[in-house]
Image (cartoon, rainbow, N blue to C red; front, side):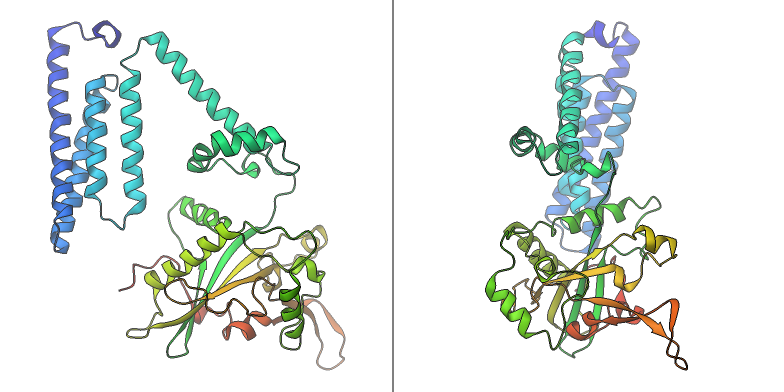
Amino acid sequence: MASDIGLTTPESIGELSIRFRLSAIGLSCAAAGALVQLGAFSPLMTALGIGLGVVGVIIAGSAVARRPTESRILGVAALTAFAATFSAHESWGSVRMMFGVLTAVGAVVALLFLLSRTARQIVVSLLIVFHFCGILTAITSPPATPWMTTQLWVRLFRPHLEFCYTNNAYQFYSPEPGPANLLWFCILGDDNQTRWIKVPNQTDVYDPLGVEYYRRLSITERANSNEQFPAGPPLESLTRRSEARTWIPMHPEAVPGLQFRMPDENARQFIASYARHVASTFGSGREGVSIKSIKVYLAQHRLLNQKQYAAKRDPYAKDSYLPFFVGEFDARGQLLNPFDPLLYWIVPIIAVPKQDPVTGAMIPGEFVYVNYVTAHAGSDPFDPSVTAPAKEQPHD
């Protein structure tokens, strides 16, 4: 291995020894941070554990940067990242995941540099081929999905593609991209006051490049996996919805069968967990006020058609959203009323042309919005005074 990485002089061997010791110091710092974090009983101890973990990773990283082809240094760096995983606060899920990825990458690369140059080239080439074959299954995934694509996705490529977020065909081509889906949470407190949380929210600046916004947008897609009803909505649900027409009518632009969308079991579990997370993270927004319920809407944001675009319609107009009511939950994420007549149905927002109050003629390009979500939730989701930013600190 010495000839492979160029360690042929006493000076280079001495430098390797220094870098190895440096990486060992980094591992010691990260391990100490993990021990401090595990026994932390105060914010100061928590901060100390985090600081030691970060310092350890930086020290080990500097050793790797100087000698990135030495297996021993890479192995120690992988152990450092593993220890740093436990030095991060337990609520820092993304940070812990990052350290876990660094652990895996360090370990794999360390093993690669134990192989000969030819073997390394073969392994890396196979990994590249694996990645692009996975992308091919993503590209061919829209209906009608080939049988082979389905089998490869389910049995082989899914974990890798979901981790890389390269599982969406529309990331690679966009003939007719579908509408985005948002999650609206209407939080009702014991004082009967409401607040809205919208995920993702364009008014919230998560990071300079907007990466976090698109990550949150991918979260909403987890709730957009639906049961299939070839014969139309279940009869019981359709009957309950018909009885509620006097209160909230059907959407005038779609047949009733297309206004029902029931999430599948996996998506329902996601929605319940989202409601529980919103309750614990945001609360009612008022000190000492507990949460009575959280109504959740999966709002489909429709794209403008050519006629609307030519008419310079607002792409964020209220009627561009199709909110499907997907449940009312308590603070623990338990569904409160499985027989709600609006459950899994569109709660319409309708644009009505505005009339001149004197002549009664329609005013071109101006609309009045009839928002039945307000009637259903008891609060206007477009009222900025009750819409909170979706990036607050955890609620105590």
